[in-house]
Image (cartoon, rainbow, N blue to C red; front, side):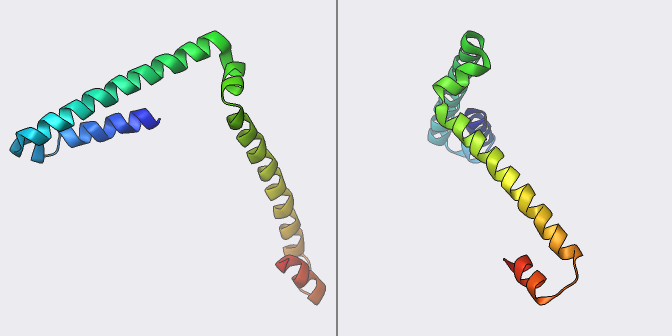
Length: 105
């Protein structure tokens, strides 16, 4: 996604009217666009190769932090849902001092 964004930025720069006015700028942006397209192609090739070679498990062995981040996100989401249900339970109860304190907490 990052290299796709870089290609989009370089394409947008190429369509800038300043490119028509300044030949030096056009040359620089064209070189940048070419480099971003090569980088995107290289990244797509490597990701495809990794996917074909190792499959889904390959990503977790090459990017272990990604797997940990997904697990942390799932745990946080479960915690959020649990706490959200507690909040909803306290909001349904009568508004007394202890209930309001627990709701605030």
